[in-house]
Length: 310
Ligand SMILES: O=P(O)(O)OC[C@H]1O[C@@H](O)[C@H](O)[C@@H](O)[C@@H]1O
Image 1 (tube, protein in one colour):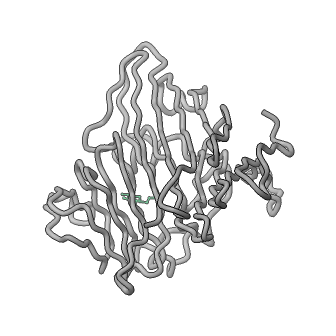
Image 2 (image 1 turned 180 degrees about the vertical axis):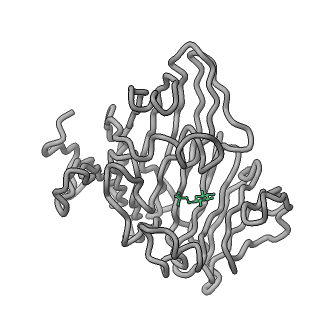
């Protein structure tokens, strides 16, 4: 597919898909190509080919759902800080591979784009290459579908579908996450519901296990929790200052939910992050960790993550 002036639909009056070039940085290592999807109502999604990385989702009222650091690198060698990095075939440092695996800083391919009624959709793929096999010696096919779907009224939703296929002869196991950074007005005023009664592993407490006792999880310190089988119902992010529900998250196929915020001290150690931004973001990640997925030759796995304002 040609990346020059590609446009489907009519960006002025209807649903559209457009491929753009980021022009602010001409360095050889700069990440440049991104796609904008727009629905007929006016919701927009931005996705970079680098990492098939969603960096923005605004609903028709123009409200941004995702956090993106002012200091994020847009470099081929790095992951973008914010939006939705795809961590695969290893989540975080839970294994021998580089942090978060091998595909968040790899360029994906656009397989197809389509518009159905009022809604645009794009499909990205990533296959193993010599470069990936040097790090992880397996043959795979990943497909990542990003689409705007109907919601309540103006509040359309973003649906993300990750499909994994084993294309080789040997079995392989993997862990993963859609490491989603939500924008919040202030984390100190934010709460999360839908996880009561779930077991979580607390990475800030030597991976001790606890049961979540609260209807509403609030934030007073560094948070790094893996909720095991965390998402049977919708998870809701609310702003306690005005009692408003901000976002509703729905998980299908993903076993765990990771909740992460670095808080004051750890935030200072992240080079591509402004320390004060810790209060503006919360990660709630569709995750597969506590039971790695084992795929044998030709087998497939699918997970869906649907995100909207409420
Ligand atoms: O700064 P990174 O490499 O993107 O990782 C951020 C965090 O990502 C979270 O998902 C992990 O649970 C944390 O342990 C980790 O610190």
